[in-house]
Image (cartoon, rainbow, N blue to C red; front, side, top):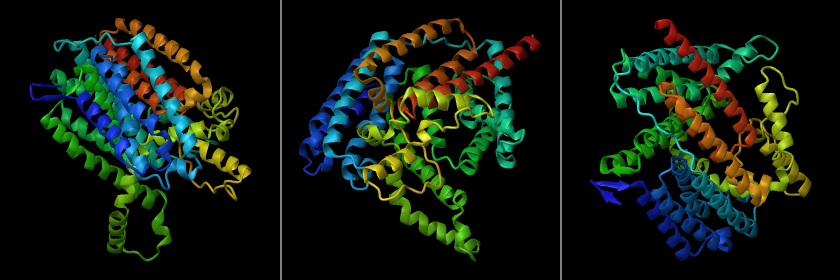
Length: 484
């Protein structure tokens, strides 16, 4: 637990899990979770056991699964109880007995997924790059410049271009959707990490870092209004630490840094939310006559009044437990979306540039409309919602696998990780910088699978990522051949 003034991350997992068990046993008002107290306690105990087992197995996919469940499920338990009224699944009519049943299924699905990884044991045969390898340094320099160039083109199109499906610009929209900021940042962050870790000499290195991440935040926050830009970079660095350094202990300085990072993430989320409300929703168009000073006062007032609301909003944004409970409990209201026929149609529409054969969105973007229509027919709503903007909703991997496969999901997990193990075995032939780039994409896709925006979304992201990687690797290999 404690060694060389460092604390194992598993200590914090177990500490908070024990705290939650004590909380569940002692807290009187559990709202609609009262019926499911035993299921929640069992889930926390199952999590503690899985942490203990992983300590001996030391598998990176188990590490990511445990981290994911801890952040988005375990830590969410007391918050879902405290903020139950007006909660996502509360407003959609989920009852106490439905919560109890969904949590029982959660225990089974988590156990199935954990055991599948444990049995198959897919892992990377991590290859450590030698510092003196000149080819690696040449490729790193080239890809850094290439990624920055693509990012500049991406930002330029997103700033001045228009998505017009009746003109040639639709093809640029498809290209820059594949070569988007998220995938570019993955490659760039991997290379930055390796340069710092291996102490490579890269000309104008820190200028390149400043330029790229400046463009990245401009594109994701200012242009797209994304609230997860900083979280994406933090997650990428965390995955790299696990992959390259077997990161499983924290020093006191790192703990202090993590504590400082929490309000920074909250501030980033708050600023992004404010910007999204004021710019993307064009709030000020409906408040005529505001000068710059008055506009600043209006934003400040909004900032102070909504700070608590945004804090709760950030908590709910990370509350995959809530999405899981609602989707599994209301599965009959989404039966037109959570099925392989719909997934096939939405996937085909997304991977055929400029052509929609079936004209259906990804399932994650249609959940609101599906619930609204079903709720009206069941008498839960008097009239359907007026949906001005499309918001994505999660299914989560656990709810989706339970809905699609029930208890046969254990077989699906085993097949999936067996295929992954074979794939990783073939990657042993990669002994250059591209191996590190490919591995971080695999880990990120695995994290996306756990997040659970739907198997159609996952299929599209996987297809785009493969295409993206093939192009980047091919161009860099051609460059290396020419330079030689």
